[in-house]
Length: 277
Image (cartoon, rainbow, N blue to C red; front, side):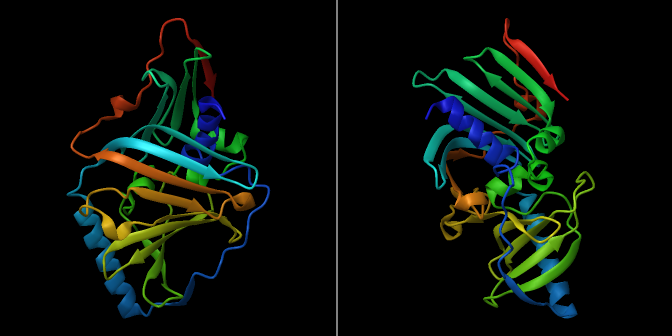
């Protein structure tokens, strides 16, 4: 499969929404049991506050090489590129040819996106929300906190916890935070926490009817170099048709401070410009 085609699928699955068109969705599995008691609730909220305070001491951006593997009943594919992130939702992904020349780039600030196709000499700019609606993709993911999802941290915004349930294992908890002010969707994001180790185990995305849209978890949480180092392996499951995405981050660098301007894709001379409101 060509790099351009793989990258297109990557954008649909990862940055715009992490899903194919939602024709089929499975019902949510039973992941939690009873709600916590008031005293337990208070303790968990205090832990969440402490975790977010600790996160503030960590860099708010990072970059590295990313390998993305996509497995589905129809075919398997993979693409490698350079990934750059800035909290809360700035992301850039660049695919290059063997000579190191960029062939495709995608960038988003969580509200708008840009793409650059050097083979077609085409630059596209548009609105993430409109793109998600046009492609029938869930807004809860398209407008999500991608820095948190790909680093394995809590969202950077202050969290108002609406519900807390005990996991069926009895050892961890699931929390439902209130949606951000910018989110215009009834879909829900649940966060799986190990309150004893104070780490995020994953994210669960449900639609308004309780059907699973996707689940993100980290399978090497115990082997991070330190608290601030992002997870090297991210897995996205519960996708339509049994599809699954694995992301491996390598050569992660957290010592470079990025700004919003670093996520702008300059338009080379002679390129066709398309605006998609």
